[in-house]
Length: 177
Image 1 (cartoon, rainbow, N blue to C red):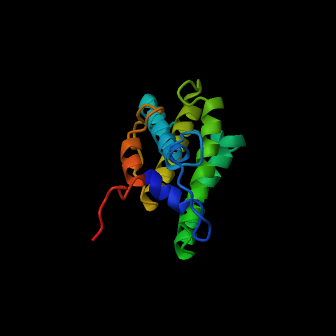
Image 2 (image 1 turned 90 degrees about the vertical axis):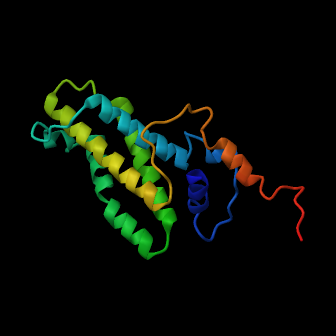
Image 3 (image 1 turned 180 degrees about the vertical axis):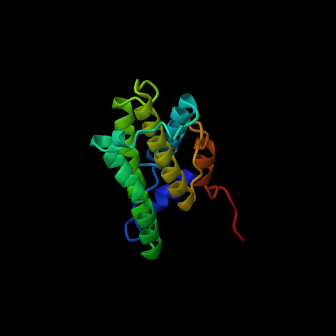
């Protein structure tokens, strides 16, 4: 049901809403399942990495390129979420989370955390993954969507049957008094 909540929030208050089940559940589009997938991916990276040793993490490894951009973007979360709440504009928070997820997904495919040879950079990158995971998780919760630690098979999200029942309501043969 989080996918529906997100689909209702994403376009904004003043825009018409079109519910397309295939699009709502797409893992590659700007959807709640895409954000849930990103959260689960971050969880998987952290699980493979193991405990982060912050004393070994080398902060300078986050000072340049995509790592720095993601770090700075993630640190904007308190301001973005507060402004979205003040403006009654959850769509701003949704857009921010999607932008952060896009940045993260693009980065981790090119810059491995687990296979980083230098221990200081590996721990710093893992800390960055934890930061992104925390921001996306909290942002999803604020939007009424449950973050996932693990993803089910991407071809058939577990919410599809429930979503189809929801979109078919009320039944066509229902009798109303």
